[in-house]
Length: 224
Image 1 (cartoon, rainbow, N blue to C red):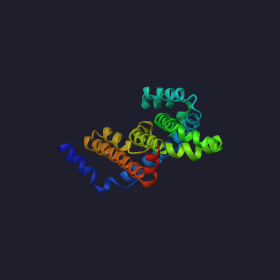
Image 2: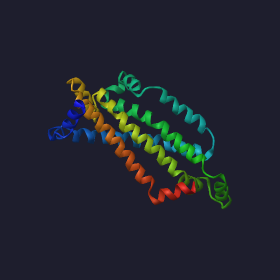
Image 3: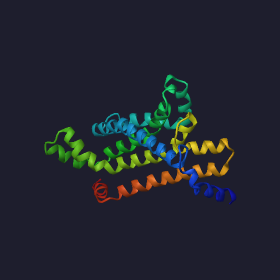
Image 4: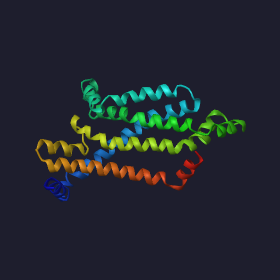
């Protein structure tokens, strides 16, 4: 219990929350890195998943290929990227590694959501004279939206937890608190950093849960 007590004492010490190395600054860095990687991952994965889900062709192959990346540890990808010219571009290797890590759940959930739309509804929309693009945006995507958002939620939480590797490449974020604790042989600081990351991940999970329970999303889930 001594370690937990000391970790709590570290967290409640106001001097650890201010300044360029304080929790506030590290939390902001962690948030920015997570949002940037999540946006880039969505821009890559969602268009592919939505189009392939609409067409019903090539989706299984794309999902399987993206899931191959899950077998490769993100840290290993980061180390390899650091050995390339990309390693000279600030947090470029970290961003690329995290984006590759976040693509599979986004792609899988969006594709499954699109293919799970009632085919009868799609046929009815086609019978009404809707074009392929109209069916995608007005029928399939609204019904698949709960699954799509579920993939975004999974990716966001995973990114929050995994973005700590940025510290290993000299980047910012809450991981710097953990690595600094290791460097100082301060177990309470390491535990405090881990608690902050876990709390941040739970907060993100809770925010997405609130959004998914909103009336609009609930209606979309029921219709799906």
